[in-house]
Image 1: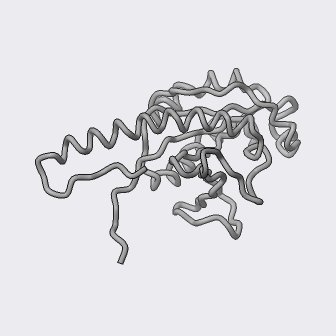
Image 2: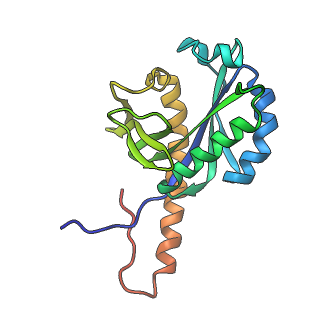
Image 3: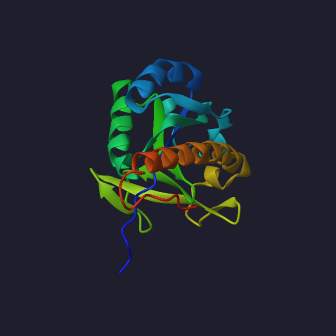
Length: 196
């Protein structure tokens, strides 16, 4: 029988894309910080239309994307609630039913990058509140590896390099988290040890 272990905290990441990304990020930044804590990483802007024009009718032309990393680590079970909240934020700023921006939350663990979605697909796992988790990338042999079903943008090296930067920051935060946990449990039996 396998032993139930302490669940690693993970690093929240939100991918925002919009035809007017600078404007809309400025509009919602305060709300994102209020909901999810301080932002500690912003990627450069990416050309989102390189991959699809699907959202142009809703948002307009010239859609760009950006990865947002958050300072505060979260429990991975919170992903469904976070997706529900980001959907609410999208609708809050929608005009005549059309979203002005899209927020795709996910998380980085030292071994994987996972995204949340409302759409069922064979490889996706239901995590509650109408939300599914999609394993998007795995970290193995020192680099991000994609799957056949990985979204085209996350197959690109430019995205993987940005996620690598967030992962490196995450590892530092994770080490600090486990050290703090070890100090708290130093006077009790069964100390928690960091698993790498």
